[in-house]
Image (cartoon, rainbow, N blue to C red):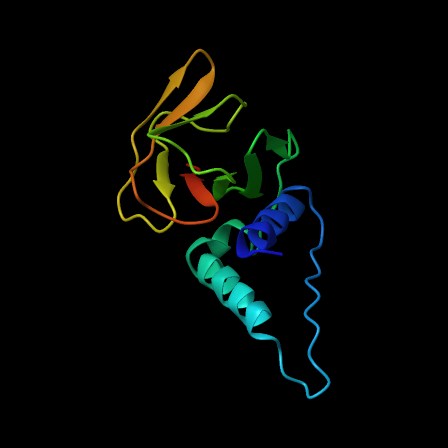
Length: 143
């Protein structure tokens, strides 16, 4: 599996309340092949930035996914939208996202809040260019 596939599988499994077992097979001498080490390091780097959308979260009972989007929740704290595809300048979420006026939306790994609106029942978030790699996580801090 590539790092993208590992991360996509981890995010998808988490959004469906599953468990992800990543099988790393060492050689007879106990060493881990370099390609597997590289995948683990890339996944670890992604988790360092975006792990809060995985650790301690649960599935969203309304829906697990929509197209390339996956959803997880930290009850009474945050709602996470993970895009498995690189978003353009705007990310449109056609789902009943639990967001209220005044809630703060951020892109994990980015230092400023993002501008968001609702349009026709959809959440529309302006996404900065050139941030992130692999899967992109938006955090809605619930008030």
